[in-house]
Amino acid sequence: MLENFDLTGKVALVTGGTRGLGQSMAKALGQAGAAVIVTGRSDKTIEESCSYLKENGITAYGFRCDMQQSADLKALKQYVVEKFCRLDILVNNAGIVIDRHYAECTDEEINEIISTNLVGVMKCTRVLGEMMIKQGNGKIVNIASMDGIIGTPRLVAYGTSKGGVIQFTRGLAVEWARYGIHVNAICPGYFATSINERVLAEESIRTKILKRIPLRRVGKPEELGPLVVYLSSKASDFMTGQAIVIDGGETVH
Ligand code: NDP
Image 1 (cartoon, rainbow, N blue to C red):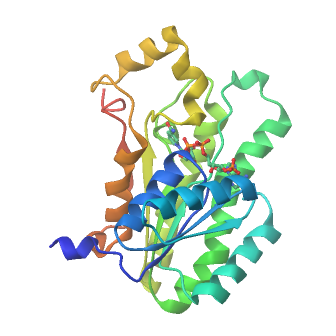
Image 2: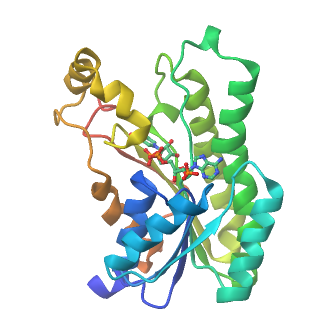
């Protein structure tokens, strides 16, 4: 049964793999046997992340790619084609947050968040998914958010982008099932990463957040690892189009 989780010989790409959840998921996929490519916007952070992954025994590669730039996405595909000739797993993780009262958001901020978190995921999947269509198989895991399901003040634009990712997941799962491609989403609640640093550092906000979470703590990035491995492996071959929430129970009540 456990051999179904084995990713030996697979090629996985994690966007936004330079830190936080992306780096942690890249590590988990690597530990399950996959060769992992991580992307980000700066050569320095990519190099640092690859070194960290290699120190942990993982076969890691890095490529600079801004999710907002179509030319970068095309160059990324070219790199994957030339270096590996295939792509088995795509984790669309790169994302940003804008934590602000919606009435105060600027047009630029709204454009930036939709273009990174939603349009970036859609374009990246179309460009890299071509390889999976040709192969006749593939696993796509989109990192959405619990805020794409529930309404959260100050995260209206963010939640809208993530709600779009969930709907994209459902539609694509149905359309690409014929190519043997599985598409699922993960909807994390609060995890301790730099994206939440400011809110979690403020004692009063932290206390309020923890009160809402039945398990009374935020998630550790490594706690996403087993789920992403499951969704990237043979073990999940009868699952597609799902959005799985992992939030310490926050959205249950
Ligand atoms: P971090 O801020 O720690 O990491 C974000 C990653 O995304 C970095 O690797 C960053 O790379 C990359 N990134 C951001 N913008 C772009 C861009 N335009 N092009 C390419 N890469 C980009 O965030 P987390 O690890 O916390 O979040 C990862 C994902 O998980 C996000 O999509 C987030 O919305 C989602 N999520 C996180 C939750 C949490 O509690 N942490 C909860 C719910 C969802 P670099 O800056 O090096 O370019």
